[in-house]
Amino acid sequence: MRKTMKITGVLAAMMLTTASFAQAETLRLLTWGFYAPEELIQKFEARYPDIKVEVTFSNNEEMIAKLRATGGAGFDLAQPSHDRIYAAQLEYDIYKPLDLSKIDTSVMEPSLLDGVKANTTIDGEVYAVPHQWGTSGLMTNKALAPDVKRWSDLCDPKYKGKTSMRLKRTILLGTAFAMGVNPFEAYSDLDKYQQILDQVAEKLIACKSNIKAYWKGGDDLSAMMLSGEIVASETWDSTAYKLYDQNKDIVFVPPETGALAWIDTFALPRKGKADDAAYKWINFVLEPENVSIMSASTGAIAAVKGGLDLLPPDKKAAVNAAFTPADIANLKFFANIPPGVEDMEGKTLEKIKAATGN
Image (tube, rainbow, N blue to C red):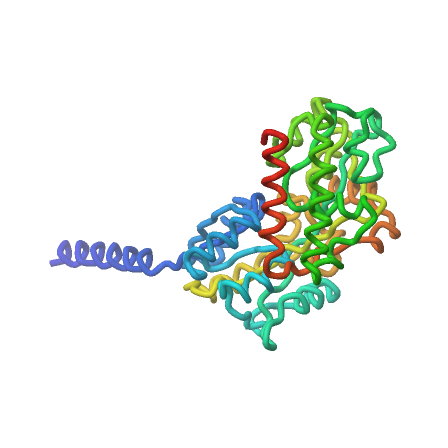
């Protein structure tokens, strides 16, 4: 009888364990590379053993494409940049409003929170809050190219075959600013914006001989900079910050016209099934000790009060080496992309790629 009771107890425990596993919730996260470090996932799953984190790494264009294809299904939390939400929501209806009462917004930097809310409010509903922010600009080896200060310097003949850039919209915008025009101000007149894009395309096609290679990811860009194959490039600041720790001559340079500033956000896909888990993840990664882990992985600054102080020492030193207060005041935050603009930019990039063999 006692033996039977033991077996029955073991079976009951196994059934309970199996049931608990079966009921475990999956948080499907659609985010950028480095935005879900394994250390944080393990900490989160230890705190919430009933939630399993599943990560898909992506970028702005792919996030929108994936969610558009499914009508906002397949993921529970996405992290598009602040300028990629308003138009995408109006065109494709891929997100749902946030319940701000479930997010500890008191820890967020007020200016960044207010900015993202303003950019992503539709019919009185807020669709995103900030997570990490940073800039795009120039990276240079100051021992080899000390005078690189402008987007157009990447095309200076004296650096022929020694520079790099990524064929994405950032270089279109940077080149436009280098031409003396503000591309964001032309968003309201698409004919005017197309004229700007045509001029930008001409300049970037003519720049082909200066480019050692068009980088596609941070790893290949980093390898070219560290090896000396290139002396300057268009880049995310976080990539430059990581290299600064290995070579103090490699620094991020805010262009004279202003570094382009982005804020990556938290947004809920319209057909997500794990909203409560998503809110738990948002609040979890905004805790100070977890901010430090996240920023060590991303190289970016968290959109929380005192975010700079929560950077690892090497990243903090790199930021201080790159930016003056005047540079911060001169930031050019990406503007909301109106319907149609992304298609125009995409066609321009395809034109450049065809002409440069990429």
